[in-house]
Length: 279
Image (cartoon, rainbow, N blue to C red; front, side):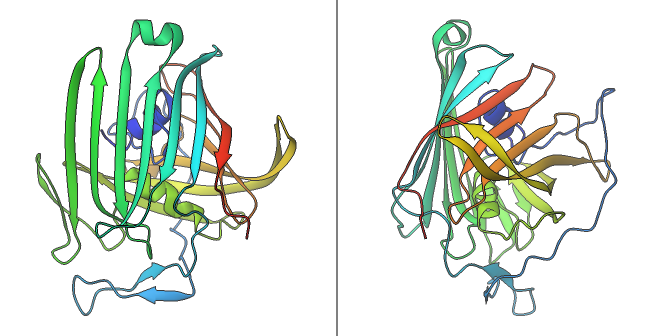
């Protein structure tokens, strides 16, 4: 599973908008690039790769924790629910803090394409950077699975496909999506997310566009709108128009994801949330 497929399988079957595109297309719309914002947190965690390596920002408290369960409906091309997704945070183990995404097609969409996907990252509870990832996908009865280990002492990500050089803050799409929830997300802030899946290492520009309210079944909710744009040819490419609205509170729950990829408009809507942070 590539990082792009985790948004367009966040978006046609996934969430974790750390969407990445390998090539530009004729309908590409680019925005002017800006330097990545510096992330400042209360306490630095030294990178273990080399004594001279830059410190990796760490968090004293995360906006999510074990037991948090977020359930989403995924609509495609204005249809009723085409797929469902459940994001869960498990109990911390020796491998790290497990964060899992389960996606499956439903209804008529499942009749056309029976998709089941499970993606798990084991992230550092201090930095929310992945230590190890594993996934299994099944499409119309055919399964595929894989894993990646982030060796931060050697600065490489190792999978069955390849050994890929990484930086101090390189991670997988799911952990980067959750790590963003722990950042200040100040309006106008620009961040560069560095992701790797298998043999592919690519970057995504995240731009905090605005604070605004969005409608929900419980009324109007204050939210933070963030744009996600893969960097193509050195420039952010906004062709898929991926936008995520996070709740503007301590939990920073992803409330809504919208995208306009070539396969059709996608809308990922939060249906229920359990065990979210309240303080």
